Length: 251
Ligand SMILES: [Zn+2]
Image (cartoon, rainbow, N blue to C red):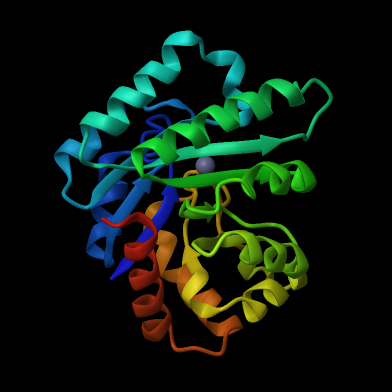
């Protein structure tokens, strides 16, 4: 059985329930839908309808301007009351682009880490071009289970994170199975295997050779590609990442 540890199945313009059913029939038996401006009504509906679907609530660093004071309360309410909410995410830092407000991003990130800490929930991290600031903040949260979604950093940085966060996981998707993704291949081979997860991030980031939208049924294909890089059998990788996901989300 496969676990998609990060996806956006609530993106209704690009995905529909047929895509979900197809993924389930291909062996994807757990999904974690990430929140970007809290948690969407569609995510709540899907988590209620499908046993296989779980959700996260959180504010993505590039969507802060689309939220207000009520958003954090909404996240807290869902994270406290909905048994299918298994993490705060996706949260983090993204300094790509000219007009990002770094201070505001750091404040909102810290607030959400505090929330996760208080509730004992895992966090799903979006991180781009902000590695030093991220490390400075996250090192104060060594008790948290941290999931690095679509990890794009170096093996050295992963090593630094592993030293401060004993419960950290690194998740990989379509971009990592590209033949020329040498950095990702090096990271994969260098990480302890019990720290590796797989995801689609559907409908974004389709695997090489496939056109958008990315669909959740691509997960076994992505998993098989990652297994090849690690010189593992796809079934071994499937068992490994299923177990790792279970520990990361405690679902
Ligand atoms: Zn995402």
